[in-house]
Length: 187
View 1 (cartoon, rainbow, N blue to C red):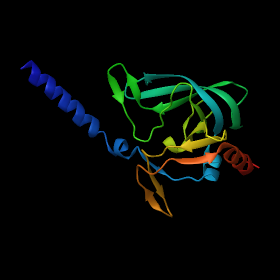
View 2 (cartoon, rainbow, N blue to C red):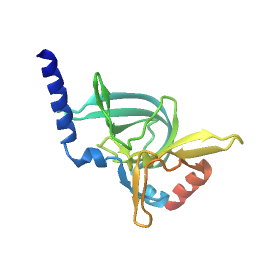
View 3 (cartoon, rainbow, N blue to C red):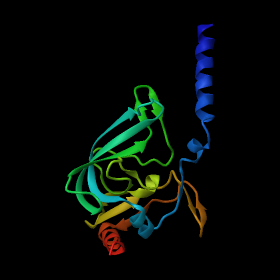
View 4 (cartoon, one colour):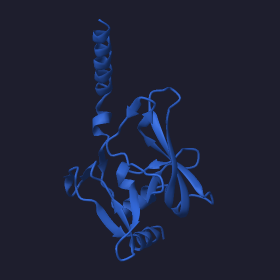
């Protein structure tokens, strides 16, 4: 009897999770922005390293957020003199509770990124366009610093191409070129 009640509880919990609405299913869908549009829409653009992350419940215990802490090397838009900034992501794990949002960027400790964020001042910034706003910075074989963006978990809608399906290839660009274009768009 106890086993049946446990299974029934799990089934009801799963049903309520999926009945919460289309937000979960559509969370991995974003409108495609080019670099100029992203620069315009972002309140904050910076280059930095991940130095910490922690997940926590919101005040009502209805959502889990992950707070990612960055040591900022350079602000390209917005920001201030602070060398540390925190970005909030929807989803994460608190104890046995896991909330996953398709398309949410993942961050590793020590990872260097170029990040486009929405929100500033009194609001904790979030990544603009889910994974669309995160570029990982690496060094290629020739020693050139490059940025790559993994949008394989996103469904990207575009009025010209209609949609790009998940599993599209990772895109790579030279960091110097991207930085120059971002600065040019702000003039």
